[in-house]
Length: 435
Image (cartoon, rainbow, N blue to C red; front, side, top):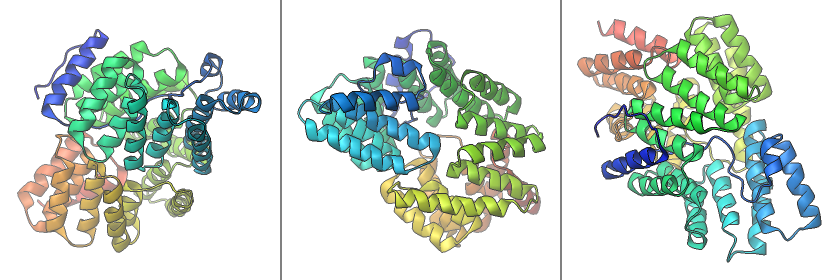
């Protein structure tokens, strides 16, 4: 598709651009910036986005326990709490709340199915999320959030044409921050970064809450860093987002990554350690560990041990992990376990990132011919991803294709010279070996 630099001046522009992508038939889904809570009172939207909202709904349910929409809203807030606290036991609470909602009403309760889709997407049970979203749409075909949840689930299960239709329908029903951010990811996965940025700029201009502003700034920072390696611009976005929402862990981790890219190493390590101490998301723990390892710090092993603890905790609470444990075992653990995780992950989430992780697992097991096939799947939509390029370059090197290896490794470093501290070192070393 032709790259577009058009500024998204109206909601209709986003819809039109999304329709253009429907013809091409590929997209990905990005989670929304704020929890889309069915039946939530306006007061809770402007107060503490989690604790106070939960308290308000719990108070309502003590007096009106048959309010199925309130049970659904509580379930979605529990998912948000699980992500904010990195306590996956909240997913079990969310399941309990949504079960009560649907037990009260399955005929008209589209909010309950919407909540169920949010819970299952959060647990990475994407096929169950799709089923729930479709059940909700059968009740209410005009609810935009249901189409967003459906698009996310379809994207993560690799059915891009169907996902494109769902997300386009979301844009048509209710243009806004959730729809614009998903449209941005559509463009990003197609390799159209100017349009991806334009969609996020529109989301930021439409944002009215601190959470929405923080979310848009976070992904603007990601775009700046991932496509050209502009760490200074990325840092500005992350810090602008933190000015709106100082407690946002994604922005804190993004800021730490940008500081590392700017060679402000002591600040980066301190920033990462703070966010991991507050919110030990497996992704952040692994990023800190690899930064510390790239600096020759023994503390990296502490982070890797914490990663395994977090992994066990999530699995014990029925949250499906896929990409992170596959790559962790491939890079820092047991190659055979990495391949086993890759096979399991692909069954649950046949998406581009999982294909890349599968490729890397095959590579570290010495199966470079098979790895190259998976690497091709990872680039099927035209997504330009520095880590994918690095992996493919190393696979080509393993196959003895020096020209292709040099091309991919050079492209990875050009796209983002800071994509991952350990892997950047490995890419440079491999290029030296290739002459």
